[in-house]
Every structure is written in structure tokens, then in C-alpha cells.
Length: 194
Length: 194
Length: 194
Ligand code: B12
Ligand code: B12
Ligand code: B12
Ligand SMILES: C[C@H]1O[C@@H](n2cnc3c(N)ncnc32)[C@H](O)[C@@H]1O
Ligand SMILES: C[C@H]1O[C@@H](n2cnc3c(N)ncnc32)[C@H](O)[C@@H]1O
Ligand SMILES: C[C@H]1O[C@@H](n2cnc3c(N)ncnc32)[C@H](O)[C@@H]1O
Ligand SMILES: [Mg+2]
Ligand SMILES: [Mg+2]
Ligand SMILES: [Mg+2]
Image (cartoon, rainbow over all chains, first blue to last red; front, side, top):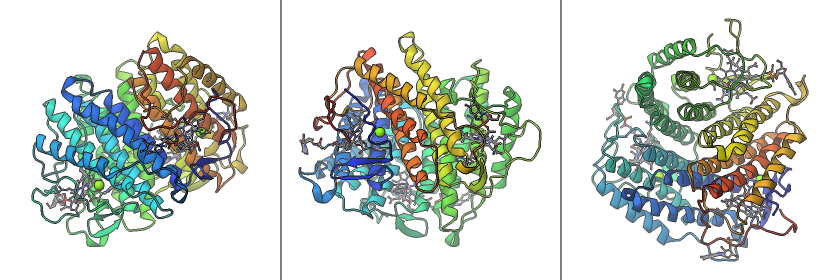
């Protein structure tokens, strides 16, 4: 097999349904989802202990989901032939897990420093990569129509990664360090949020 | 507590004092400071040995500082109610430490390959993330007024991370590899620099 | 030596041949090559075992190459005084190694999840950083003339990193996981490719 095809050497490439410049917002967006996916793959290498089996398995599932998200934005919306892959169910799966992990980890009022254990640190890196991907999806949406659940999935994923990072530290008895000049930014009641 | 609020699912979010698109340059800038902060958190996990206590503790201090920087640019300048958090003192702190570590590590004339020990490698990654954040702050400054010390702090931080990476390798007896086709780019005299 | 010069504190800096804003596309491009270089330095720390001597040494060579690429785009094309450093030979070197590793690793039809061993995971992260750098070089080319082999080198490098990641997992008996809803995307015949 020839892995490289030399067809991208002039700075253009194929998305599903069009030929575009490699710095096209569509390519930026799914390229960053690929990057995020790589961080999650890396995070999993620190979570092989039995104590993290839940998170370990969920992260693999999420890796498949991220390919679903990538496929859905790699295709030109108007030319899509198959049903989109990103579903409401995938979002609900994340929400259920977030609620669960928020419950397990100690309550939170202030921002915490990203870090602690290796696994949690890499989950925090992945969290910020998810947010970078989300910003690029928002830019993409200003140019072309996309399958909206992709944006919601990636938004929720950064909260999942935050919750998972906290639980990992908690299970390893490593206390998250609060930002020392933080206000009480996390609202514990179900009041209006932004 | 509900960690996710669903209010960002349409691609907009709140900064302090306004509602903006998630790809707003302000969000790009503090989102990347958050990413940088996560790399520093990760770097610290490799620096728990007594021999690195100085750097380990400084990096925690820097993580708090980065939240200060983030707060200062998350707020719309004209609507700031509290004093800004990023100070000249924080910059002087970095400068003092840089001078100290430059003295400790072997003298340098040529570019070095980022790498060596794990700790130094991650510090180099953080260094390049600091520079990415700096570029985004420069873009932001073209759009809105910001608290200028934030830019200087992040600029200096990348030099701190370079100096710290070199010292870590040095203390572990790992020689930095010089870029083999490098000119003598580092000026050892206090001549004019750019 | 004074590492910091304070001359960049207003958001401008020197490339070779001009003074520019720090968010200039040229600075974005070589700044991201620097970031990619840092990931490769990090990947090497996981490849010190004899079984990976080939990849370990190739990655050091590639780190030098990336400085060559960086130099070539740091200089204003029209003001270049020395011959460019990035050569066709460097590209052929990558192609030869890719063909070799594609042969060694198990045949591939579907996308795989980035991950597996630590070394492979970090190689996948580097792969996606190479692709991010490539996108920024494409943006740069729309603004100014650049030495074209740089683009080709960075394009090929992402394929090298993919092939190397697969070989590392293979040598460690870790099976790559296929994306479960993937089509047969990798073409095994030498048919037309995009
Ligand atoms: C988009 C894309 C990517 C995206 C993937 C997007 C995502 N999903 O996140 C990203 C950026 C990650 C990517 C990465 C890479 N890619 Co790519 N990629 C493509 C591209 C443009 C489309 C592939 C694709 O999805 N085809 C669409 C359809 C047919 O596949 P599908 O969506 O999976 O649909 C099938 C099934 O899923 C199913 N299906 C469809 N919808 C649904 C819905 C449900 C519910 C279900 C169950 C099933 C189902 O039916 C379909 C038919 O089989 C192709 C080029 C092209 N135009 O074909 C290159 C291509 C496959 N990539 C290529 C390469 C080299 C790579 C990389 C190695 C590059 C690198 N160095 O990093 C990596 C490998 C990544 C990995 N981990 O394996 C090469 C392969 C060359 C070769 N030898 O054949 C190609 C051919 C481009 C080229 N250079 O010519 N890639
Ligand atoms: C900016 C911001 C961020 C920034 C932080 C910026 C920075 N500092 O670097 C970043 C991007 C890092 C961030 C991340 C996250 N955030 Co946020 N964030 C906000 C935002 C917009 C403002 C928070 C804030 O700083 N408030 C300003 C004031 C009140 O606080 P303050 O600056 O700390 O000021 C206080 C003190 O510091 C003191 N003070 C002020 N000035 C000075 C000066 C000195 C010298 C001193 C000593 C004291 C002092 O007085 C103030 C009053 O108490 C809020 C939404 C909102 N508009 O409130 C969301 C918000 C808090 N975030 C939220 C979330 C979910 C997160 C993340 C989990 C998202 C994610 N998945 O990654 C992470 C968590 C990060 C972490 N490590 O803990 C949610 C929380 C939801 C909830 N359940 O309540 C909110 C409410 C947004 C939302 N969705 O509705 N966030
Ligand atoms: C471009 C650049 C970078 C690029 C490097 C680009 C690349 N190659 O990838 C990047 C972004 C990586 C970089 C990083 C850093 N840099 Co810098 N960089 C520069 C800059 C603008 C140009 C340096 C340069 O390449 N000079 C060009 C020529 C003279 O060098 P050359 O290409 O290597 O050419 C020589 C040889 O290679 C040979 N040659 C030329 N062509 C060919 C061809 C062949 C085939 C061969 C064999 C030889 C050969 O002849 C030449 C003459 O000796 C200078 C400022 C300036 N304008 O000088 C700052 C500068 C050197 N950097 C500086 C700093 C501080 C750094 C960082 C520490 C910043 C940080 N915190 O991260 C890091 C250190 C990185 C490291 N790993 O060592 C400072 C040093 C301050 C000081 N005390 O002297 C400078 C002076 C900028 C400043 N602030 O004033 N930098
Ligand atoms: C927690 C805070 O983070 C900011 N925010 C929301 N989405 C993103 C994103 N994708 N990237 C960076 N910052 C974001 C908003 O300001 C929110 O209130
Ligand atoms: C060392 C060299 O790095 C470049 N430089 C300065 N600031 C940044 C940044 N934030 N990102 C990338 N490159 C930068 C300039 O060209 C400087 O001279
Ligand atoms: C494998 C697929 O990846 C996409 N592609 C090609 N080059 C890049 C890049 N630099 N960054 C992100 N995606 C890219 C194209 O769509 C190609 O077909
Ligand atoms: Mg969000
Ligand atoms: Mg600087
Ligand atoms: Mg390519």
C-alpha cells in the first residue's frame, strides 16, 4: 500500500464532496477533532488500572464517537448520502456520565488548577483541546451548514473531561488545588446559568 | 450541581461583561491560556523529586498567575469592577528566575533540539503553547483594549519555560543536543537584540 | 547572558529580514513547527528501547530537519542570502521510511483509533500537530512566497508519524483498534488517490 499519495503537495485536499484548500475551516475543524482524539488515546494509557475501568471504557467509546463527529463535518452537508452518525443518544450518554462523576467527586465552588495525577493532567489537556475544537466548529458553522449535534457533543465532552479528571484525582486521593484568588464561580443551585 | 448548562449549545457564551461567539478572539486567548495551564500542570507531575522543588513550586505559582491573566482578559476592559490581577511583580518574579536558571545551565550559542528528559520535553511543549497563547493575545489586542501586563507576562513565561527545561536536563546530566546547522544565534554580550 | 530582551513586549518581533506582528502568518507557521518539534522530542523519550533504535534515531534527524524547515520560512524569501536548507533528499528519506514501515505493520483498510502504547499515542499527537503546522503553512503561502519543499516535507512527515505509530504498537504486540463504523477508506491498490 502507498500511504502517501502526493496529491496534497500543492496545499489542496479532498473533503467528502469537494476539493478544498487545506486551511479550509472544515479541515481545521475535523483536523482538530483528530488532535483531540489523539489526546484521549494518550489519556487512556494512564487509566489501565481496574479502578478506572469505567472511564477507560467510556473514553474508547468516545474515540469512536469523535470519528462519527469527524465524518459528519468532513462531508459537504448538501451532498450527504448516508444518515449522519452523531446522535442525541451520544449526547445523553455524556450527560449521564457527567452527572454521575460530579456526584462522586467532592463539591466544587472555585476554579481548580488543572493537574494533580498524570491521568488527570492529560484529561485536562484533552479538555482544553475539546474546547479548541469547539471554537473551530463554531467558526465553521458561520461558513457552511453542519450537523448541529456535533457542536453539542463536543461542548459536552469538555465538561465530561473536566468531571472525569476530578474523579481520577479523587480516586487516587490527590486533592485538586483551588485557584487562590478565585471567586465562587460554580453555582451549586439550579439558578440561571450562562 | 449541574456542571453543564446547555446555554453554550448554540455557539455563544458569556465573557465577563458581554455575550459573544465562542470563536471570539477573547475566548480564543483565555482558552489557550487554559490549555497552557494544563501543560504546566502536566509538567509538574514529572518534577516531584526533591532536586526540582524550586521549579515544582514556581510552576504552581505560575498556574495561579495564569488564572490571573485569564481573568484579566475574560473581562471587558471598560466594565472591569475589580483591580486587574496581573502585576509588574509577577513579571519581575519570572525575570529573576530566568536569570538564575540561565546562570545555572551551561552557556548557549546555538539552538537546541527540544527534548531530553520527559520533564524537559513537556516544559518545551508548554513553552510553545505559551508562545501560541501570546500570538492570540496579540490578535486580541488589535480588536479590544486589554491589560498590557498580561502580554508581557506570557512573553516572559516562554523564556522561563525554556530556561527551566534546560536546567532540568542539566540537573539530570542529560546534554541538550544542538541543532547541527544552527548559526550562533544566542548573543552572549549585552549588545542590541530584537 | 540575557535570555529575554523585552523587545517583543509590544507584540512585534523580528523574522529574518523584517519586523512583524507576532500573529503574522509566518510566525504562526514556524511557531507551530517548533511546537511539533517539541512533541517529537517528547515522543523520543518513550522510544529508548533497543527495539526502536531506528525510529529513535530517525526522529532526531527529523528534529534537525524541522529546524531547517523553520529557518526556511523564518526568512523573507526575497531577502534570503544562504541556500535554503530543506531539500528533496529529506522528503525522499521520509518516503523510503514510510514504505518500509507500512510494509512492516499489519495491512490496513479502516481508520484506527489513535492510541495504544504511550509511544504510539504521542506519535499520533505529533501527527496531528504536523497536520496543524501544514495548514498554517498553506495559509502562509497565500500571503507570501515560501520555499515549497517545506510544505511537502511537513505533509509527508504526518504520514511518517502515522506509519511509525503503527509499527511501534505492532512491535509491542498492541493491536490497533479499528473505528467501528469506518468504511474501507484505505485503498490497497495503486489506483487514483486524492
Ligand atoms: C475524512 C478523512 C479523514 C478524517 C477522518 C474523519 C473522521 N471520521 O473523523 C481524518 C482527518 C481523521 C483522517 C485521517 C487520516 N487519513 Co484520511 N481521509 C478522509 C477522507 C477525506 C474521507 C474518508 C471517509 O470518511 N470516507 C467516507 C465514507 C465512504 O466512509 P464512511 O463515512 O466511514 O462511511 C462508510 C461507513 O461508515 C458506512 N456508514 C456511513 N454512514 C453510516 C452511518 C452509520 C450509523 C453506520 C453504522 C455506518 C455508516 O457506510 C460508508 C460506506 O462504507 C478520505 C479521502 C476520501 N475522499 O475518501 C481520506 C483518506 C482515507 N485518508 C488518508 C490518510 C492517509 C489518512 C491519515 C493516515 C493521514 C495522516 N497522516 O494523519 C489519517 C489516518 C487516521 C487514522 N486514525 O486512521 C488517505 C488514505 C490513502 C490510502 N492509501 O488509501 C485518504 C484516501 C486520502 C488520500 N490521501 O488520498 N482522514
Ligand atoms: C472566565 C471563565 C472561565 C475561564 C477562567 C478564566 C481565568 N481566570 O483564567 C476558563 C476558560 C479557564 C474557565 C474554565 C472553566 N469553566 Co468557566 N467561567 C468563566 C466565567 C465566564 C467567568 C468566571 C469569573 O472569573 N468570574 C468573575 C468574578 C466574579 O470572579 P473572579 O474574577 O474570580 O473575582 C472574584 C475574586 O477573584 C475576587 N477578586 C477580583 N479581583 C481580585 C483581585 C485580587 C487581587 C484579589 C485577591 C481578588 C479579586 O473578587 C471576585 C468576587 O468574588 C464564568 C461565567 C460567568 N460569567 O460568571 C464561567 C463558569 C464559572 N465556568 C463554568 C465551567 C463549567 C467551566 C469549566 C468546567 C469548563 C470546561 N469544561 O473546561 C472550566 C473549569 C476550569 C477549572 N480549572 O476549574 C461554568 C460553571 C457552571 C456551574 N455549574 O456553575 C460557568 C458559570 C459558565 C457557565 N457554563 O454557565 N472558565
Ligand atoms: C527564527 C528564530 C527562531 C525559530 C527558529 C527557526 C527554526 N530554524 O526553526 C524558533 C521559533 C524555533 C526560535 C525559538 C527560540 N528563540 Co529564536 N530566533 C529566531 C531568529 C528570528 C532568527 C535566528 C536565525 O535562524 N538566524 C538566521 C541565521 C543567521 O542563522 P541560520 O539560519 O542558522 O544560518 C546560519 C547557519 O545555519 C549557516 N547556514 C545558513 N544556511 C545554511 C544552509 C546549509 C545547508 C548549512 C549547512 C548551513 C547554513 O549560516 C548561517 C550563519 O551562521 C532570531 C532573531 C534574529 N533575527 O536573529 C531569534 C533569537 C535567536 N531567538 C531567541 C530566543 C530567546 C529563542 C527562544 C529561547 C524563545 C523561547 N522562549 O522559546 C527559542 C529557543 C529555541 C531552541 N530550541 O533553542 C533570541 C535569543 C536572545 C539572545 N539572548 O540572544 C533571538 C536573538 C531573538 C531575540 N529575542 O532577540 N527562534
Ligand atoms: C467557562 C467559560 O469558558 C468560556 N468558554 C465556553 N466555551 C469555550 C470554548 N470552546 N473555548 C474556550 N472558552 C470557552 C466561557 O466564557 C465560559 O463561560
Ligand atoms: C525567537 C524568535 O521567535 C519568534 N517569536 C517571537 N514571539 C513568538 C511567538 N509568540 N510565537 C512564535 N514565534 C515567536 C521571533 O522571530 C523571535 O525572534
Ligand atoms: C486524510 C484526510 O485528511 C484531510 N487532510 C489533509 N491534510 C490535512 C491537514 N493538514 N490537516 C487536517 N486534515 C487534513 C483530507 O481530507 C484528507 O483526505
Ligand atoms: Mg462548554
Ligand atoms: Mg518572546
Ligand atoms: Mg497529508
